[in-house]
Amino acid sequence: IASTVASNGSAALGGLAKFVATAWAAQVAFGLAVFGVSLWFARVPLRRFVAEAREPFLVGFATTSSAAALPQTLECLDRLGIPQRIAGLVTPLSLTLNMTGSCVHLAMGALFTAQAARIDLTLAQQIAILATLKVTSKGVAGIPRANLVILSGLFATFGLPAEAIAVLLGIDALIDPVRTGVNVLGHAVAAPVIARWEGANPSTASH
Image (cartoon, rainbow, N blue to C red; front, side, top):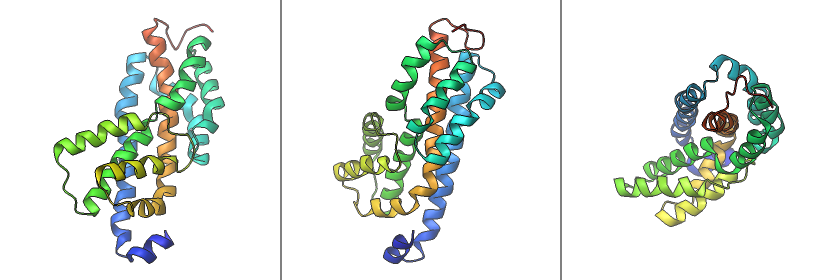
């Protein structure tokens, strides 16, 4: 943050503070809307899910590493009654393919950079950016700052200023906890949805 202020002046803090607040709000809104609907489809009571998923969420939030929360996520799914054959396959795959919080943040970072640089992106370009992020966010490492590697490649492809990576790095530590927490919740939600597709009742299924 000190480097960002030194390079861009204290005026940059206002825009960055708004971005941090918007990033948190977007992650919370995404979690409530998408995860809420997914849990309703899987017929998992929201209150019970929140109680069981609290521990893995806090581990991911504190460590900013979704991989670190994997053992607690598997224990959470076991307590929710998800068959082990489903949880043992879906959750590790979700750790690589289901980085929802990261994808939301990457899209916001790209559009924020375009606005800050006064680059007018056409609707086609915005759709192309979102489609690219949908693909490139798959396989991103579940470790801190891995998202910035994806953004650096995206910026080079779409002509966005690479200097913005340093600006985003200055505030990434303020966003990473909630972004990782949403990733972890996504891993915990995926298995009940797949269990429902497989005809199992997540709340009563035997192991």
